[in-house]
Length: 547
Image (cartoon, helix red, strand yellow):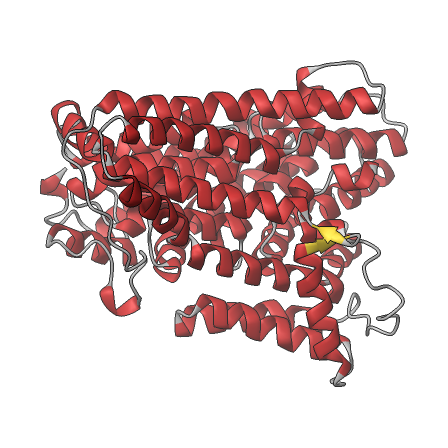
């Protein structure tokens, strides 16, 4: 029970530890083989080269299934068992999957109703009176991402739904919107104790410290690591700078130039939105959208605390906010929040005296617009389960243990954590593996360096997550922005590498000198030099004049 509570929001990819164990006892072990990289490598190459995310994810899952089963026909049964485990847990419907699917569909229906009753249009018009420029629209998106820090899924979809009408009206590309969402959400939630990520990491630290008889409190350790989270801090600084100065580099510059011509995304890459059209009402009020979003946020937070309190009550624990978030039911809380927001939007829509049949059809259409998101998430969870069995993470962890140069260890752990998250598509899985490994290394070599090494794990995992086309949070940022997913990956990658390079430098200096101030100084100087160099390489074009 304890282990299941600390899975990724009870995600089925990581929670079914004993699934079909009697049927698949002879899986080939790749934990000590570089071949464990083959599945994520093939998947990522296919996704980037073809632009077909679902096909690439499923192809990788099939390849992994056959590798694990010695290219025997039993691989088909294995694959179907993994797929079943996403939807069925212990003989009943898996509640995590059900709740996330419901959350997506409820949010889609809410957005559709706010479009039908005119609230979205009213908000866009209001924003034009308050937000006067592309800069303002971009900064609004970043500000919302910072405010809605409670969960990455919630952040990606909530910020996208609210910001998209505004950024569209100022001709900001969908790829730029996806970057603003993605590069705000993960850095914020990983540095906030009262978030789903914070609760999970604090819980991991607590159990790991207890196992090694380390007396430092997990919350205290978490807070002390925040100033050493080079990547998250630099990524946040960069996204604010990009929003303010219209810093468009590499593929992003091309997307932004096309957006100014009215092409918010590359049509040839596949339309990011559903072809379903919803009539846009003209008699809405800004208040209606604000109240729906406020209820979404408020009810979700209350539900997180309530479900956490209920879980602790069943375990006879003392009540505390951080402890409650550690064991809260995030999926169910998101359903409560989105359901309440949908009901609010529905009441406003009924008040417009629209035809009941049109309202019902709009609710159904809104839910149906999420069909592609559900398929992509299912495929991502499936390949995540296969990659877990093929032990890519364990192989990378073994590399860390084999190269124990103490001065270079923070940089090495940062790099390998980034590679692990990139290859597996899960920062949470990376935390689960690397935190335990890192504490082992620190207690055996240099306990004084433990928090530095753990900070490197957190930084590296978020960077790898930002770069990975198979990460569920990256996928959801594309969905929230209604951006083509591969366009989002290609445009975000240069920014992630920029922040990541400066973060790597910071961990190198911190490992060699032990001085956090000096590490930040050197890291930030490199950060500025890289931005200056890229400014020269990608001089401000006509997009700058449209700030």
